[in-house]
Amino acid sequence: MAEVHPDVESVVLSEEDIRLIVSSMGRRISEDYADKNPLIVAVLRGAFVFTADLMRAITVPCSVDFMAVSSYGDGIKSSGVVRIVKDLDTKVEGRHVIVAEDILDSGLTLSYLVKLLRSRKPASIEIAAFSVKDIPNHAPAVTPRYVGAHVPDAFVVGYGLDYAERYRNLPYVGILKSEVYSR
Ligand code: XMP
Ligand code: MG
Image (cartoon, rainbow, N blue to C red; front, side, top):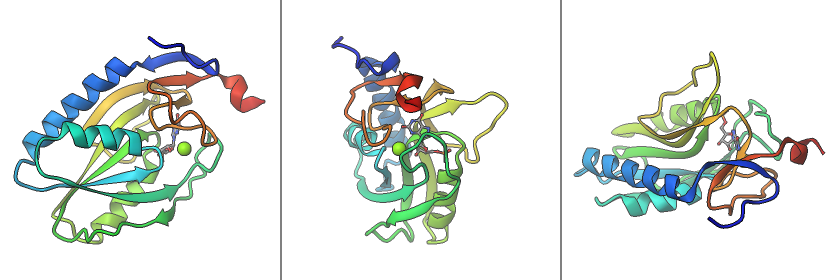
């Protein structure tokens, strides 16, 4: 494996892990949505890397659109406030929507988003979460139909996930050293 970034404490999902996770999720979605022409809604910015790989693992017709919400700012704690920064260009009514998200933490962001999209009367709406944070004694506000992997309750970066817009380009997911965000 290539050198691990010096700001990364440890790798939790390697490139190979990610390949397996995404191809298996793509296979399941292809089975479940064979004749449904799903609309994949990627939640920017983090989910764009995952969505690009996921789409190529889906073997049935599908389309993609993007939505940008902001809940974390540049920090590491959720502000609890979800703001729509960019809305979809595609009409959702009657479509089978799959919301693709990079990481599910409290689930508040997705809970808000799903509620909003539901009001536009899709035929169905499900969540494909690349990763879900394992938080002791805490159930996320939404239940994704597709879950790629569970990650520890730590701040993780890479594969689209950032800290202050950095590290999205790392091809693996790793725990960020705490001195990076406390300095
Ligand atoms: P909630 O709590 O609403 O948060 O489920 C989901 C959003 O918060 C961001 N997030 C993270 N981003 N490393 C990141 O780079 C993390 O460990 C992390 N935890 C949450 C993420 O943008 C997600 O959409
Ligand atoms: Mg972020």
